[in-house]
Amino acid sequence: MNKKSHKKKQKKRGKNEVRNKENVIEVKEDVKVKEDIENEKDGENVKEEKKLCYEIRHSDVMGRYIVASRDIKAGEVIIEAPALAVGPCSGCNVICLGCYRELDEKNLSKCAGCNWPLCCSTCPGLGNYTGHSTYECEALKNAKPNYDNMEDLKDSYNALMPLRCLLQKSADPEKWEEMMTMEAHNELRRARGDIFPMNERTVLQRLKAWGFQFDDELVHTVCGVLEVNAFEVGGSGASARALYGGASLLAHDCTPSSTHTDAERAPARPLTVRAALPHRAGDTVTLCYAYTLQGTLKRREHIRLSKFFECACARCRDPTELGTLASALRCPRCGGRVLSAAPLQPAARWRCDACAYAVAAPAVLATLNRLTEELEQIDANDVEGYERFLSKYQSTLHANHYLRLSALHSLSQLYGKLARYMIHELPERLLRRKLDICRDLMRVFDVIEPGYSRLRGITLYELHAPLMVLTTREFEKKAISKENLRNRLKEIVSYLTESALILGFEPSQSPEGLMASAARDALKKIKTWEQIIGKIS
Image (tube, rainbow, N blue to C red):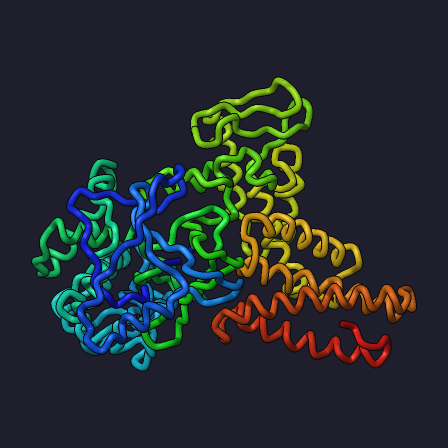
């Protein structure tokens, strides 16, 4: 959970060419890629190129990647690009082909043209290439879904996104050409031994059963393009992935310098990439191909298996993960910090930094897998369940361990939201618990997702709430001085202001966009306090 606004044609990669955008070793030489301008006589493309705040470079290690061509401010738009193709995620449940919402298997609407599942006959995705297009509907008329076997129906969804990409070859050749400039890593994927057979069964054979006669290698290439470059998109129960142009050139880093949002309800479902941090001219623009709230072992494993390279960014190289200790375990002997002796070597032993204790990597991985499974079994709204998990493993996991961070992140939003834990009804003990959780999270998020990141925006909003309630209660009891009240309100205003700014970049009707609106409303209400204590800011 992510990736061209260039319309110019680009050279296709060679058949066996492998290019990654990972942060592996120092690049010996950067050479700016010379893009074709397609001989536009009016010079419009040249004029457009000058407006871009980035340029594309090339190295033997990273292939093509994007750097800032000038100084870029935090929050500034770097790329805004329409989707080339949108479709169901692999392994999804039965969803609407127009809007990607999960459907009740016992109460399905069906497309009048092809009989495939829809949410309703007026789905906004009907007739759009980002949803269930007219040409897809026509193509699927002879590929009837099997409603008598729901597992087979679910399995058939794996072939729909590759089919949509393949249909673009005739429906929209320009989008098809841009997709075909993306890396597919066919040789690496074929050598893995598991990927090609899976795609052979779930995609290639399915397409043949439906009567399509696409070239086998082309189908595998499309599958590779999707596996390497697709972003998971949507929210509110949607399950979709999409391909975007220039965003596919963003280099990877486990502490990303950019953030991105897809406009689910906008025409062409554009992706907007913004600077999370200020960039100087020449800085590489990065995003994270893995989940930032994971430890190095899990992040590198995900990147190796799904993106086909070994990450060696600064966070991955550092046993302490830039001082966050997001992978650290507690020493069973002395309570010290147990860290990997060589984080870029998955088989390296883990050692305590305070005594001679050491443990083999497989044992660490087994512990992480067991605890991860236990954490994932907790119901999403089970406050007590998360608290029990944290208490149970406080002598096993460091306070900042990523599994604890995951549980704490859930609690930061549950306290104040659930029926038994509404913010104005929480006792002081739980208000302070929520406050401490949010502050602990912010100390880590400021490092692993710095700047204008969604994680920080949400947590800043959650942080203001208990502080506001505690402040109000203290004021009503006359237990806070006017000066302390003013300082407290300044702190709350700073949290709300930054939260509203960050989350204001999200679509207005998304959960994050609604939270931004709530932050702005809260700021207006705080203004009423100025009648009591004078100007706050």
